[in-house]
Length: 124
Picture 1 (cartoon, rainbow, N blue to C red):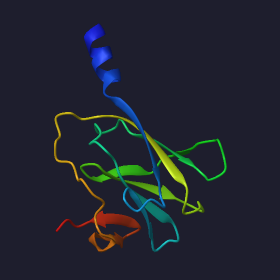
Picture 2: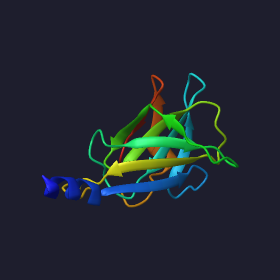
Picture 3: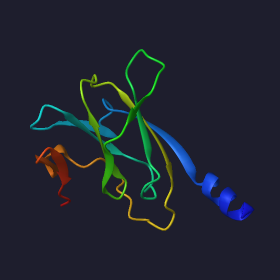
């Protein structure tokens, strides 16, 4: 049992992505007025292990973000309402070491489309 607990916690990581850093994040406007943040994580997370919080600029508090999901491998989206474009998203997750299909750089904005108030990724 000790091995499993150690193995789980040794693969847990934290990552902060500023949405105005175009190497790792972007905002896409949805048809219902919401913004969908698209973030490029460093690793592929294990499904269900991701916890995301938003940290608005000039604050020290974190707001839980509940509508987060994977689009493809290590590309994740977070639904935001009325957050500034320089908000930081803090991700905590367990790295899936079995999945080596990692996107290395942020895809171009034209590879994402908004349909039915969701963001869809179309790789080239």
